[in-house]
Amino acid sequence: KIEAAKVRLTVKAGNGGRLFGSVKTEHVADAVEAAGLGSIDKRKVTITSPIKSTGDHEATVRLHEDVVAVIALQVVAAK
View (cartoon, rainbow, N blue to C red):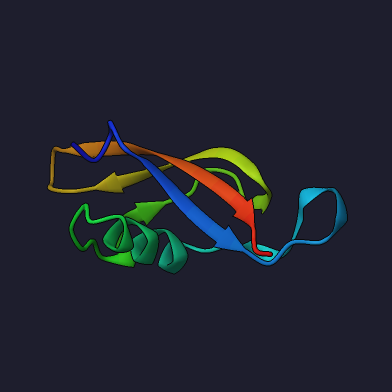
């Protein structure tokens, strides 16, 4: 269920879609909960490469010892 959904994150960004800072695991965990997909611990979220721009990205979540889910993230600029 969590892999099928696209999680939307709204962050502050400058011209050209470049973020002020980067998306952290805490932001991903909060966005997953806000999307109604349940609560996850930020320590179980892994972002493979730093997210510093708007667009589509991926993160992985370790749900259990042997279960890892890939989450599709859509990072959009706050208006």
